[in-house]
Every structure is written in structure tokens, then in C-alpha cells.
Image (cartoon, rainbow, N blue to C red; front, side, top):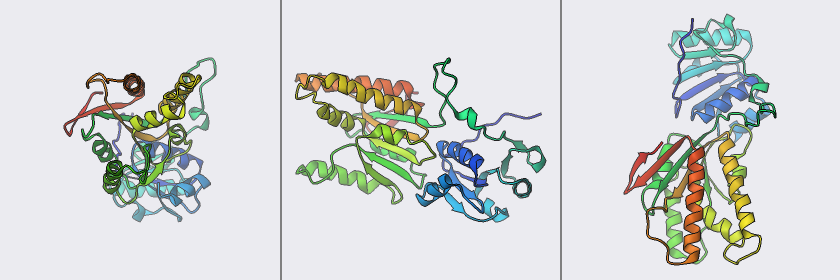
Length: 311
């Protein structure tokens, strides 16, 4: 008989013994759970080697052994049978949870070998996308509410994070904006990588295992996209283009395989903007926030530096 159990792996070491296709799929799920992943195998698949080169995972290209289990909370043995049995014995001696895909390895826990077909989209007749291992967190708040710092703290234990900056960069002549950008940059850990882009949907849709993404912020993304679509210029196709861009973002948010934290301004509690353009932006951002929240696994609201979980 077995006992069902879930593990919180955020920031904790998980060791994968094996470097093939099964290891790839296990690593995918471990990264989505926020684990600090170490892969040990004589040969790594191209996907795992790429993750190691980018610093998303740690890797040791040799046969897994007892010394690789130091500081581990969880071990997944998905190499050949002899390696699985050896790792299971070593993990058992150190009282570390070890998962193997075969009954003969001697581990206290078992995990079915990942089936490639299980991660594919269900039959078209269902009309329902397959579940994704990613996790979506939306952090809302007003100006200077602490929302960005809260979002950053959620990923602080992770050595590698892709920081998706959607605002204008420095050097545009706005000294006050430049100072805000510098303050945000100074808070980021050295291992985080900044990507300045409006193509957030493509970042979220990266298919393979990828580091966590922090999107800061949705408000500046929307303001720039509305400008790009010609909303303020009164372009004839502006509304249709804006709807297409926001739908694309929502779909990518719903289906992402990454751990994604998005920051956005809560605009529903302030005064009514005095201009038609201000009211239009407020309404568009409110609708977009609601759609992101509906698809999020967690939603937080920051007020005066205090973060409260709404869901």
C-alpha cells in the first residue's frame, strides 16, 4: 500500500540521476515547482545541456553517486537500473526521499516513467488544452505599494530568474523615470537576467524547462501596446489589434510551463481619471487584470507595503 504525499520544493535541492528524455520531463516539473535542480549523468540530452549552460540547472557529467545527494530533499533516479538501485540505497541511508520508476530499485517511493503522450494535447474532441506544470502568480497594488518588491521576494531563493522589463529603458530624458529604473535594477540579485521586451507572450510560451519569469509590469506593457496599436492616434483597426494582443497574452499566461510572477497596478480604487484617454486606460487595465487573475494560481494585493493573498 502507498500513502499520497505532496512536497513543497520551492528553493530546495532536487537531484535527478539521469540525463535522458525521462530526466527532461522530471526536470520540467521540478523547475515549475521552484526546485533547485541538480542533474547528474555521464551524458546530458541537448535540452538539459542547454539549461545547464544558461545556469537554469546545475549539472555534473559523470555517474551519480552518494556524494551528489548532499543537501538534497528529493532524488529522482531515472538512469539505468544499476544506477537507480545504487542511488536508492544511498538515499535511504541518508533518509532522503528517493523516487524511482521501477520496482526493483529498492526505493521507498515509486513514480511512473513519464509518458510523452501524457503531456500532449488531449483529443480534439475534448476541446480542452492539456494541463501545464507552470504556476502563475499575479501581484497587484497601487503606486509605491511594495508590489514589485513583493514579487521579487517570491523568487528571491532562486539563483536564476528572467526579469521581463516592459517599460521604457533609461536615457529617454526623463530623469525621474531613470531613477525608478535604477532602484529596481539595484534590488535584483546578480544571477537574474533582465530582458527588455513587449513580447511577453513569447517569453511565457517557451516550450521547454525554463527559469522563473518575473514580469514587471503589466501596466507599462499595456500602455506601450495601446500606443503601438494606434489607440491614441485613433487608428481604424486599433481596437481589433489591441484585443488580439491582449488575447495573445492571456492565452500564453494560461498555458505557460514556467513559474511566472506578474506585477500590475490595481486601478479600481482611485479617483475617476479626468480625461477620456485616462478612463480608457483604466478600464482596459482593469479588464486585463481581471482576466489574468481568473487564470492565476495565486493573486496578491499590496497596500502600504503589506501583501495580502486574495486567492
